[in-house]
Length: 107
Image (cartoon, rainbow, N blue to C red; front, side, top):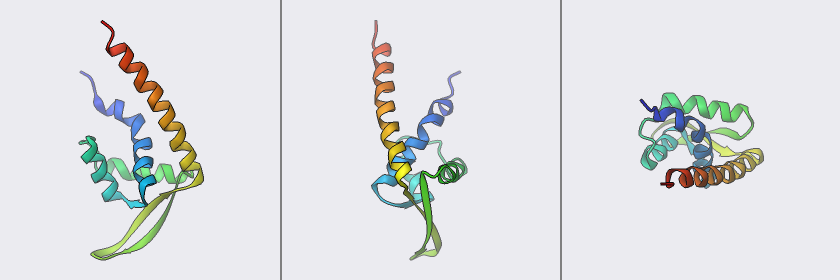
């Protein structure tokens, strides 16, 4: 049986960076954006380790900001390296998606 989670695994980092590139964001909002886009199986238990890994790789920076409804939230934004990584991801994704579509459409 095909496991979609294996296919998603390699694309989540790029999608997370794209969401954050639009505006700095916090974990819950990033998870909601991913779910809204169709990553229904993404939860905070999946997301937070990825955010930590991206931060450790120097692709994200984090800062705590006051929240109007509760404790401070950890907001993430892209570093220069993160912006470069996202550009490279987008190029690689388009090439890969195009190649897969070409094969799937063959008769």
